[in-house]
Image 1 (cartoon, one colour):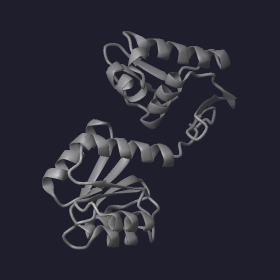
Image 2 (cartoon, helix red, strand yellow; image 1 turned 135 degrees about the vertical axis):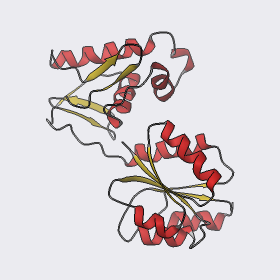
Image 3 (cartoon, rainbow, N blue to C red; image 1 turned 60 degrees about the vertical axis):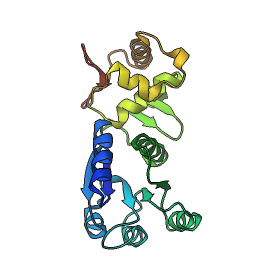
Length: 222
């Protein structure tokens, strides 16, 4: 599961962000001070959401300390909409900058964009099934699967959260970009096509789990 560290001292903002991210399948760890945040950063942390106006030290100082040991992506939160703050934050190594007040959905979109750029997905344990984010390709036994854009995006979604079952609506919201392409059973058709692509290379290989009445996902163990 993708782990997000939120360093924010305002309880209302803290709660809103945490609920939004957890509802989207992220694991969220929370800190209310810079000191707590620095202590909570680990190699398992995928991204940090960092408020500049913390009670014990400013976010720039916190980022400076974090960068001594970790290159984890960071999004700054700030109440100040000044160009100098934005430039300073980015020059110090922040990946993005968002000004309060903001929509939780906007923050979620920015988090996903950064994770798409930075997450390196590893091959499965048996090395026969893997996905390349940079090339946007899925491989089985070293052979490229001939997937459509929607088929690839569905596999990318599954690969990021193995073992999680997504409803058809969740898959549509995450994968479909053109409303006119959306229709009843569109997700079922995409899953059917993905399975057919796997069978073209290995007849009995099916990494996708189907749960009747719930949806689809990637099997945790293949």
